[in-house]
Image 1 (cartoon, rainbow, N blue to C red):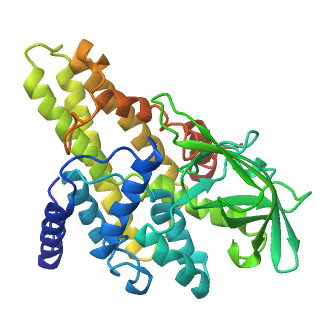
Image 2: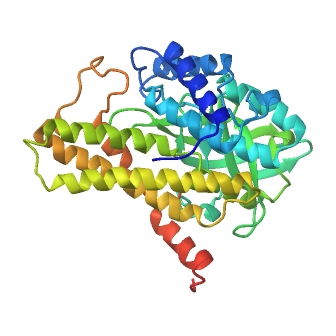
Image 3: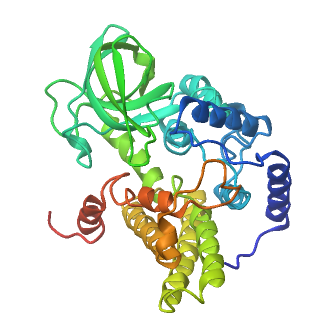
Length: 386
């Protein structure tokens, strides 16, 4: 991808690259979902990032950031992935809740929650989905009852990312008896609070990436409500826009994977199906096209635009691109794709293609299933009937 960068942006890229070369661990950390030790190792990495003011570069300095723009964030992400730096264990916080807090939070809420989020001192989980409300988020049944200066939370959340080891969660709760899309509030709660029970849910690779959460009369201060009472649906849609349209899946993630795929093809092309070359080219082009689209989105947002329904088209694209890219990798590897790497054998920047493929399969489901995203596109962008 050939983009023209200003001298300031080029200097910033050099600064990021130099810092990462000096600080990224030589050996990969144990995955943050694999164990408490892996989780805490990633928390320590978040603190290392904060020591260089890299926790979230777009946030104001008072909240632990550098006050940079979205283009500089994309540059940071490109260098971050190319350096093989550890995954961001606090992605639910810094990429989803953080931007939402910035838009809807009070000054006191921003000062309370953003700095420890940027430093990794407090790691966040997302607690939206329920047994009867997955992609249909408007169907949540968990309740929040106002009692003086507190809310009393009750209900059942499931598939809560990072919730096994995280410190806090942000969830959607409704006033008892309220209608769909109405009477809901976004509320923060501590995951070790009295009345909170969390049960690990193991993924196919054995990691505890999710938790089931049961809340029984959990008291939280009204200070923990983001935005006005009953504004929860509107706020959650803003968060979903960040998740689907910009921050959760930065283009560098796919550009680095596509480059690695191309390298593997060059190394194995004599023994692989020659028809796979077209898939390698497609994967590379898709990653570049996605990056250009995100740069365009970042430019529009910097000019004052808002993320709208078009975020759904973006989410469909990156989730399906991810599957195709990894399917191609497994096809090139052939029978070798079934070999599980021995612990400690992967080096910084290496890809575990099978494990990454299994994770990619979830892409069309999380962040709102692609079926629901197609409905959103049809109704809100194309004006088709429900």
